Image 1 (cartoon, rainbow, N blue to C red):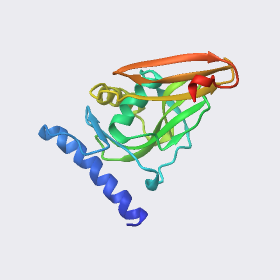
Image 2 (image 1 turned 45 degrees about the vertical axis):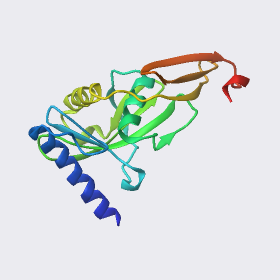
Image 3 (image 1 turned 135 degrees about the vertical axis):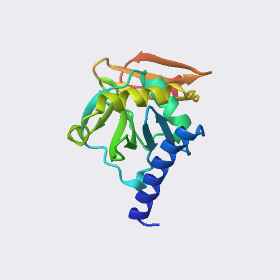
Length: 180
């Protein structure tokens, strides 16, 4: 299947997520819906741009956001051990107007954010509110990971255990032996 077909399928999934909400059905896999907006956590094969600017914060911890996204779409398609760019999930979104827009969720130095092209939509605050509402209905899955924060000169161990998010800092440039 070529790129155009994958993109057409993804847009059909977004429309299905919006109509599922109206009909009281669960959204398709990898899709979320709330308040008239549909979100599809995209695979890398959809070539959704993760270049752009931060649009606004997502009111979840770095650990909790990733646990919820991982419950919906699996491990992040992009991750590093740098605190400034710990992980990124590309997504497509569709609002009331039917316009499909590329965006991405990421954990960066300022915490969890929604990023994208600010000029593409006039309703980003409503998009973020709908996304947060959709995420509030998802239970985070357990996982563990680490990032290095050069400003704190510490490794940050983060994740979800037993449904509870955690973040622990361990000072030093090298991870402790127990962390391997």
